[in-house]
Length: 118
Image (cartoon, rainbow, N blue to C red):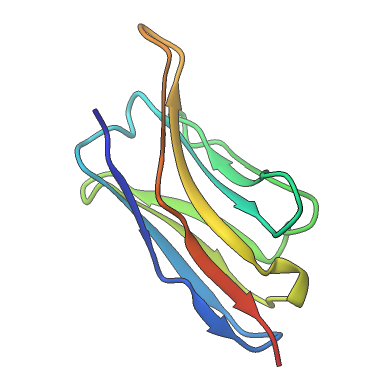
């Protein structure tokens, strides 16, 4: 079992920055790919950024150049640095961990609210 706990959300003005954190209950980054998803009211959950076990990263077009995903393997923490925030970034942000081998497993955090408003 893996427990994921997000933190760092809140209310910020357009153009501001926030850093989200996702703490894992044990060392998993060597075998789990990690990602940040978000879900706005009335919309489907979408992938924001992902980082693989090989440390390659992927970003949605809407956040490229503004958001940065990283992880600290020693501390079992993944981060999402969010800069130049826009009102359309408002959503609940979720931490995800998944692996395909040897057993398919997936875990989700409880989510943290990010609201961008003037």
